[in-house]
Every structure is written in C-alpha cells, then in structure tokens.
Image (cartoon, rainbow, N blue to C red; front, top):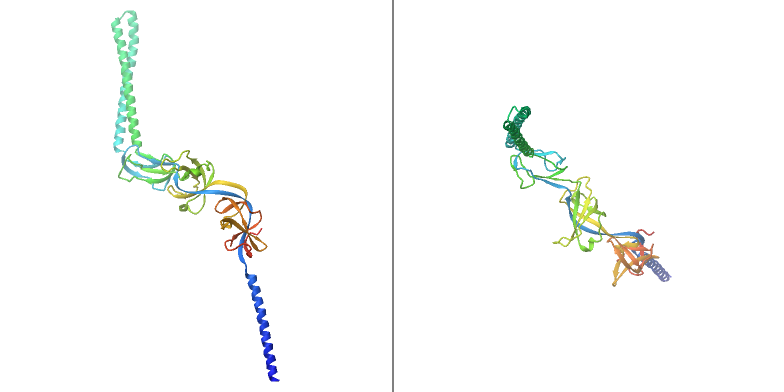
Amino acid sequence: MKLRFRLLSTALIIGLTLTVTGCGSQAAQTVVEEESYIPVEVQSATARTLVETAIFSGKAISDQEVSIVPKMPGKVTGINVKVGDKVQAGQVLFTMDTVDLQKSVDTAMIAIKSAELSYQMTKDSLDSAKENLERQRALYEAGAISKVQFEGMEDQVTSLENNLKAVQLQMEQAQLGYNQAYDAMSDMTVTAPVSGTIAALNVVVGQMASQAMAAVTITQLDALYVSLSVPENIVNTLKVGQEATVIINSAGEKEIKGVLTSLAPAANAQTGLYPVKVTIENTENLVKPGMFAKVEIPTKTKENVLAVNSEAVVLKNGEYIVFVVEEERAVAKKVRSGLDTGAEVEILEGLQTGEQVVVKGQTLVEQGSKVKVVGGSES
C-alpha cells in the first residue's frame, strides 16, 4: 500500500510539473510573438511646396564707406572722435595747426584793403577828371580853349578809366588770394562729409596728417550687403529682388532677411564666377563690415507636389523605395523621385496621397516586417 501510494504521488507530481511547464512555454511563446515587432515613426505623404536653395559663403561690406583724406597736410592739434563713434555730416573730426595759414589770411586781408583804397582813390580821380572834362567841353565849344587842350583832358580821363580797371583787377586778385588762404585754413578743420560710424582713425595728436593715406574712415552700418560669387549653373536661376536668408554667426544665430540687389551680367575674369550682392537689414548694428556670412538663396520652387521626408527614401538592390505601413506590416513601394531639397523630396510615381510613410526605422524593416507605430503623424 505504501509503495502504491508513493508511486501515485510521484506520478501526480510529475504530471503537475509537466502541465505547469507546458503552460509556461506557451505563455513565453505568446510574449515573444507579441513583442516581435519593429518600432517605427510615420509621416503622411501630402502635397507640399518645395523650395530648393543654394548656400554660399560671403563677406559683409558697407555699401557706403567713405575714406577721408585731408585736403592739405598739417600737424594734428586735436581729435574729437574715436573708433566706433557715430557722427553726423558736418561734425568736426579733427583739427590741424593753422598758425602759418592765419598769417597768410592776414596778409591777404591787408592786400584787399590796400587794393580797395587804391581803387577808391583812382575812382575819385576819375570822377573829378570827368567833371572837369565836361566843364572844358563847354569852353572848347565856345572857343575859349584849343582842341589840343581839350583832347589832352580826354586822354587823361581815358587813362584814369584804364587805371581804374587795373586797380579793380588787383582788388579781385587780392580777394581771390584771401579766399584761397581762408579756405586753406578752413581745411585744417576736417569734418564728416556723411553721417555714419567711425571705422578707422589713422591720425595722432602732434603728428602730421598727410594726403598719402586716409585719416578717417566712416562707414554706414545700416547700409550693408553681403558679397557673393556664384557659378554659371546657378546665376540664371537668380533674379534681382528675390529674398535670401543670411546667417552671420559673429552677429548671433538669428536669421537676417536679405534681398538680392545686384547681379553681375558677366563673370569675373579671374574666378569665372558671377558677383552678386545681397543687401541685408542691420537695424541693431550687430553686423560689421568684414564679417563672414552664410547665404541661402532659393533657386527652384515647386508648388502642390506630393512629397515626403528625404530620409524616408532608401536605396535597396539598386532601386529607390519607401516603406508604408499597412495593417501593421511594412510594405515596400518603388518610387521615382523629383526635386530634392535635402529635407524633403518630391515623389513623382509609386506613392499615393495620405499613405503612411516610415520616416524612422525604415532601414531596419523589410517587406512584410511587423511594425508598430510609436511616433510621427498617422493622419
């Protein structure tokens, strides 16, 4: 009896163990089947506007930069500005020594006064001679004086008239000499011809300012452009007036609006490239001449075309395909692409609007792979 009981007990335990083990295997298999999928992100294929852009590097340049050279050399006696100062047209920038020129002005003034005095004396003599001539005319006509005497008086008047003209010319020359001396002295005070910002200052108090180099450079920071050079396969896609996006890291990461304002009709003889100007807004004066810039210019636009994320298109066995999700399965579709902007690509054939295209995980799936959408836009 005890032996039979042991045998039955052992058989029961083995049976229960096998049953439990069998159930565990089925549960594990079920879990494996349920977890055997590839997570993907999807995006609906939709009609979009695609813009192809070309990226160029350039340098910011002032559209209005003025180099100021003194009209006359001279010793600098005072400087009223420094680099970075904003100045208005007519504002004094620096002054030079005027001691010697002041002497020339004083001498010219004396010459003017002398000429004016000589002119007045000659004019008075002429007026007196004319009055006397008129009195002698009556005597001559009455026969009281001879013709020779009368003609001598006429000659005197003519001579005085010529003298007056000569003295008048001397007076005008003296005035011209004064004006020149005064202008030369005025040129010793150098003023700003335009409003702007002082970009360079090459004078020092006590040293000579010469005409060999610019003493001051004024630039207008609100009138800047980026100078570019574009190849021949791009130049005909551009036109004056179109907008561009400019990024100048030295002036911050903020995108700057630009407009193409100049397009050279001929290529540079040395580089074979076409010079282009893109005028930019610099309202905060953060951009300075000489800063390097990256410029994005639209070169081609297509509206209302079927497009997907460029990463969705993969190359398999020499063919371009995209994977779409249908009933939790990946379905490969051969496509023919068009315009590729780098971020998005136009699909000419092989895809329908609204299909759920795999944009993340597409390199991990194959035809018929079980997938689970874990992100993206399914609608």
